[in-house]
Structures are given as C-alpha cells and as structure tokens.
Amino acid sequence: MDELWRYDATGLAELIRSREVSSPEVIDAAIDRIETLNPVLNAVIVDRFEQARQEARLDRKGRFAGVPLLLKDLGAAQEGEPFWLGSSVLRKADYRSPVSSYYVQALLDAGFIVIGRTNAPEFGTNITTEPVSTGATRNPWNLAYSSGGSSGGSAAAVASGMAPVGQASDGGGSIRFPASYCGLVGLKPSRGRVSKGPSAGDGWAGSTIDGALTRSIRDAAAVLDAMAGYRSGDPYTAPAFVRPLIEEVSEPVGRLRIGVLDHPLLRAAQADPVVTAAVGEIADFLSQHGHMVEETWPKALGEEEFQSRFVDVVKGSIAQQFRSIERMLGRSVDLDEIESDNRVFVELGRQLPAYRYVESVDWLQSYGRRVAKFFEIDGYDLLLTPVAPRLPPELGYLSDPKLGLDRQLEFLGFTGQFNVSGQPTISLPLAMSPGEESLPIGIQFVAAYGREDLLIRLGSWFEQALPWAGRWPTIALGGSPQ
Image 1 (cartoon, rainbow, N blue to C red):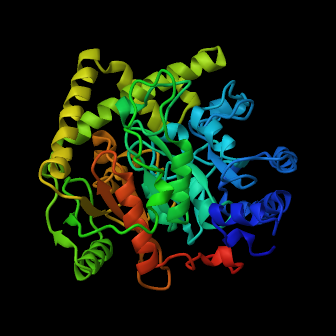
Image 2 (spheres, one colour):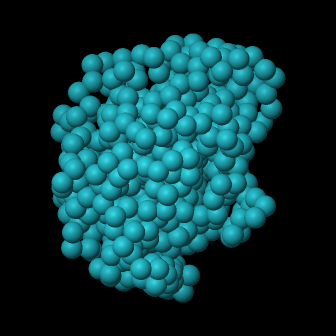
C-alpha cells in the first residue's frame, strides 16, 4: 500500500479491477501523499477529499474506474466546484462553476475521481506557476526552481506522486514547459482534438488545447482517448483517430525522417549549451537506430513578426477574459484586482483595433501553413527540438512584476509556434542536466497535424530504449528536498 504512488493510472486501474486493492484505498493513499507533500510544494490549492472518498465507495465504470485525478484551476470546470483561473478576484468570491467542461465530464465518465484542483498562474499567461492568489508552486526536483506554467501545479503533483494524472492545458507551451521542468510526459494534442465546450468554442484564436500530464506513454494515450472527440456545436474538430491511441503503444515506428533544431531562432530567446547538447545526444541516438536525421527545420520558425502577432491575440483574449470575469461576478472589476502582467494585457487589448486583431489572426493562420509545409509537403515525419532553450529558472525570475514579461521571451523559441499551427507535440523526459542539482530537460517532438499516433509510437519506443519510470525526485522518495 505504501508504494501505490509509484503506479501510473493504468496500473492503478488494473489493481482495482483485479481487487488487489480497492478504490477507497487508492484514494486514501493519494490524499495521504498530498497531505504530506503539498505543504512543501504547494501544487494542490483546493481539495475535495471527502467527496472523493464518498465517490470511491460507489460502483464506477470505465477504463480508469476509481483512479485519482487532479484538475488544473484554469478552464477545467467541474459543476459546483471552485473555478478561480489563478485569480485573486475569483478566489475571494469563492466562485463556483455552474457547469462541467465536456472533457472533464468525459474523464469522470472514464471512471476518474477528482481529488483536487492544482495551482496555475492567473489566466494562464505565464510559463511559471507563481500566482499572487495562492503562491508559488515549487519544483519537486529542486524547491528553488519553477515547476513551469501554466500547468505547473499539475506537473509538481504528478512528478511527486500525489496523483498519476494531472489535467493540463496549453496555449503557448503550458503542458510542455511543466513536463520538461518536472520530468514528465506532456502531450499537446492537435487543434480541435478536445472540445472547449460547453462554455467556449476555442481560445486564443484556436491556439489553446486541453490535455494531461502523465508519467507513462500508455497513460498519455488512454487519457487523450477519453478526452478526445467532437461535441455538439464545436466550431471545428480534429479528424478522428483511425483506432484508439492506446493501441499505438508498442507499435513499431518504422524509419523516420526527422529534422533537428537545437537552438532558438528568435532574437529574444537564449540558449543554454547544456540543453543544446541534450538535443544533440538524442539526435545521435535516433541516427544510430536507423532514422534519417537532418539539421533542418521549418524556416518560418525564424520569422520575428510571429511574436508581435501572437501577442496581439493574447492581449485581445485577456481583455475579453477580464470582461467575462465581470459577467461571472455580476459586477465591475477594477484593474488593480488582477496581477500587473495581466493589467498590461488588458490595457493593451482594450487599445487594440478590431482590424489589427483580425489581421493578426490572418497572419498567424498563414504562418501556420508555412510551418505545416515542412511536414505535409517537404516530407518530414517529425521535428526534434528542446521544449525550452534554457533550464528551469529560479522562482521569482519570471514572476518579477517589472521584468517578468520580457524575461518570458527568453524561453519561447520552440512551443507557441505549434499552438498556432495546431500540430501535436510531445515533451519526453529524456535528459537530465549534469551536476548535483540535476534538473529534467524535456525533449520535444512535433508531428504533422492529426498525427498523435506517431508521437505515441515514438514515445513508447523511447520509454523502452531510454526508460524514465524509475527516475523520481528526492522528495518523492521521502528524502530531504534540495
């Protein structure tokens, strides 16, 4: 029983089905782990322990019947539960969602039991999780460092064994940064793969998508199987998988043509030689195993205009988010009630002409076509990059009220571009930095639109070739954290 935290969701579900353990025992073990580790990590900001215990005693159906799940406090609405979006103003009002997101309901239908909600930066606009409202989430590998954002709470929880799956979302890297920094699998699905309904059609002009952070490839596949699919009224949806993703696990990948980009192309981004070297080692490993690996990439990734156009969409969207919060609360909200970075976005969004917003959406759609050409016309199966050009920053570096926004640009060379193109990507925990304060380095693979199946096959191969299942931070193993 003391080792249940080591199991992935699929393994726990098998134990429950075989009656080797009961769902109440699994839920109690997860709760005990949260109560032990969360005071240090601050990953879970809302618990629903008593409700979860009651639900564990009920007869549940589905692949993950009786398995604990954590939801990110950003978009993952559960009827009657807190819904704060990382914001002090909603937290002070103790705002509760009137509906459940379609994908949250899908996870419940798959048998998961929600045991709590995880920390997130306000409105998801930072790649670190240090909101004013609930405080910083610490990286389990080293408490002085960021766990990433905006899904940093989910990442820290899964990496430390609080739960096998943490729901996550990604508008510019928010699944992949936390996966990279905390040593997890982070699969960002294709645009339209997971419905935003019933409360929204899309987010950030189609750049945001929901998914999960896991420790195993089979969990990444099976959880997306549960979440994916068209729901009534969706403005668009990704083509259905030929077969369930879980059936792609352990299937051969064949000989792949892979482009490699080991350094950021945008001027503001800063490369760390440790990260560059890690990408090179994985490229060499793939080449040694028969894949065609070339130092090449979509040339559009070097277009500097991308940043200003993408920021147009973000600031317009955050201005709209601010308006929606006023509607949710039924009152006007003062700008001083939100964090400084988001005040900037709201003010700039209010000044953004409608024609400029539409023009930027058009530009980004054209940009996405230029990126997709590398896969769909030039014939490359995958692109290999780091998730971030640098190792995780120390806490406080990206949340600085004056310098934080500009500092984020130092890390944004490889992620948001594929939110705009809508392509699926995956962060795999394939490297660690050298030295006593070793930190995870996520390696990103990008596939053509709709090809999550290829990413799952590749991830499954790596999981056997360069296994990470036994790699845990010291705090997870009961030792003193760094």
